[in-house]
Image (cartoon, rainbow, N blue to C red):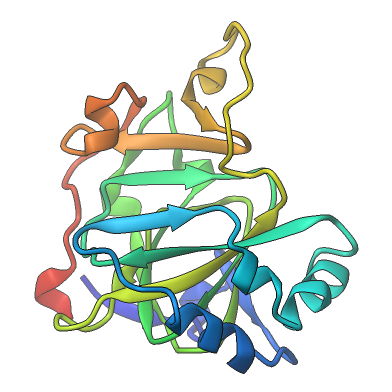
Length: 211
């Protein structure tokens, strides 16, 4: 698998890099949070990250005044496992380099997406990377075999919290697994074993041999 940069032309359909933000304080706060012993951890909102000066700047400028949250996804991962989407853009900021596995929402056909459509993009430490609402994504991957990753995740407040209760009338409504989170799982993933919609066909991509 070829790993592009978020500065390459190939990234243009998926998102863009936002300029003009000082991420140094945020990265320092991220570094203070210990790594999980194994696997990947995620918290939608972390108080120490939201106390950073970048928080109101992102709310006002990047999200146009919407209420936001800053959480983090961190740990060790090289596999695709699932793809998700929201009804809005997500911002990613890593304390080090990391890799995003992305696909296009428009390539979902009859509730399925072929993982051959997935592309990989490396993001550098400190960059504010916008991932568009139409871009399927999931947990970042580490860019170095010997290191894990820490990526701050900025989203509208409430995203990835408790799922609203309703009776599903349409297929897409069955994919909702949390607030503002629609998920397609690979059959090999733990999410699929827990009942998530199996919507990824083909190989469960592992980038370990490419980093």
